[in-house]
Length: 230
Ligand code: DGL
Image (cartoon, rainbow, N blue to C red; front, side):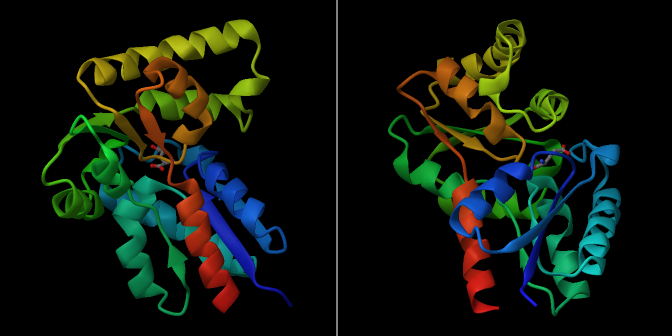
């Protein structure tokens, strides 16, 4: 029997990671669990996110997954240490905001990170920032409204939207992104797996001088490395 890779997120966000993984590892059997009933995770207390994440993991293990991708920055921040300690035989792949490439590449010295409050409150964010972004200004921006909007799309891409729906969404994105560009940010890090869905709109608002950094493919590659070795 082949190795099954399980992915979970608070909702549809982790599909961005699943799609990236499937594009480089089409032969792998995968299962996705989106906990939309409890979405969003972003503002919940840490212990609650840990409990919800463990419930997702148990479900995926029960259905035969041997590798688990925590396809959610918030769940990674709150629960990955706990999960690794509790299930030492299960390889877990998690997400952390891609501050490193942003800090290395920025020319303005200002990078913006979009994530949930839960992610910004976690050790991983703090450590990554202290380690790689000592000499740059990091604008940490909570973008919970993006999570709500992407949940509402139920897995549809921006390209599939009717004109009026797209225009409304563009206004929501503009309200968040324009101040970051005005503040001089030339790198915007997508620190939540819901946000790659909005990347075309974020790029449209931010303009050609700003690079939007999406870590989905890097995470997918890490999952593939583990899958190939398993
Ligand atoms: N997709 C999740 C993440 O990557 C967060 C969304 C939520 O708040 O539930 O952080």
